[in-house]
Amino acid sequence: MGYKVGIIMGSKSDLPVMKQAAEVLEALQVPFEITVVSAHRTPERMVEYANSAVERGIRVIVAGAGGAAHLPGMTASLTPIPVIGVPVKSSNSIDGWDSVLSILQMPGGVPVATVALDGAKNAGILAAQILSVGDEDLLERIAKYKEELKTKVFDSISDVEKHSRP
Image (cartoon, helix red, strand yellow):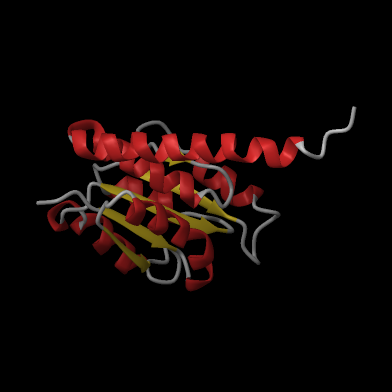
């Protein structure tokens, strides 16, 4: 059974943010699934998704939600696997702060790793890093990915520094 990440979001409107997790997982060759699971509008679907995740091969869940943002925490309460919460700045949020705090402030015993507001890319990287603990090949792909990030910064230095004036 291969490693797999489940990417879930509260509504389709979260897709522009959450697809960033999918893109980085694809670049790192980590299998994933992506779907909509609303904690408030389809609670039964959320329970079924979380309860069946392990038997379906999911090993990490990336859950994005805006507004009250209960999806990551409720999912974490139902499954033994790691859940990474992505607070999404949505049309019904208070500048995203309600989402950040809803995901961040979990009670003891129900951890949710939380990334920055709209930080799905980092959630995808973190999911891959969690999976890499037992997978040397994946660990090497992540190291290469991070080396490429470093190279992009070094490549940009001359472009920026040419605007310097003595």
